[in-house]
Image 1 (tube, rainbow, N blue to C red):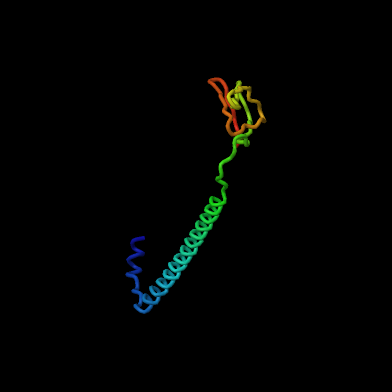
Image 2: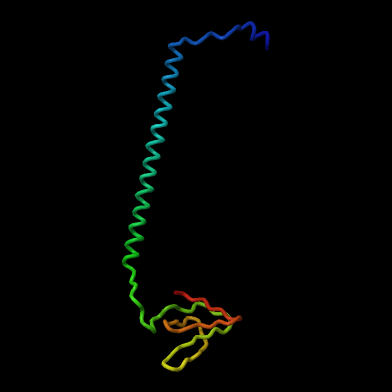
Length: 126
């Protein structure tokens, strides 16, 4: 192998005109790729900014439309989905307080309280 390399001799140098032409072609391709990536990045960034702005508009418009007026006592606040043990519901009516067992699918109204104790649990859907 070494003998073949010696017999072949040194490599012929590339003419300067050809080297300049190859360098210019490679440089042009590199710049075209760089421009494509820059344009793609600008489009993606602009799209993301527009989507974020649209999301903010939707959130802000819904926040403005939320009814924040106080709800009267007795309005439905939640529905009992599931119970474990024996949770109790306390209803305040005038001067007296009534405590009754809480059952699934019952409604819990504003002004009522639920007592679960240590052995009872209640899952509510608001």
